[in-house]
Image (cartoon, rainbow, N blue to C red):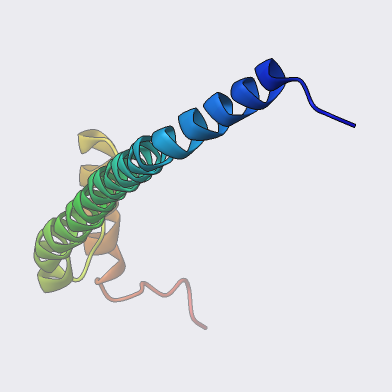
Length: 107
């Protein structure tokens, strides 16, 4: 059975078009994949920098806290979380505890 020439021409034109566009489509897919990978790497680098900064800040805070605790460890007393009046009263009570105990009436 003979095939219409218009149909064969149409199929040939479509095949030629597809074959002609293949390199362009491949290059477009390559560029899209590359740009996606570069975007992901930039995002990962930013995230890593943020996490490193948080870690460094926490280490700095720990170091400063250690330096501030040296003064309390020298005097051997801690007044963390107390008001000034409460701290003074606590110091005075410690001074009173250092005195000799007084005995009551001993027969």
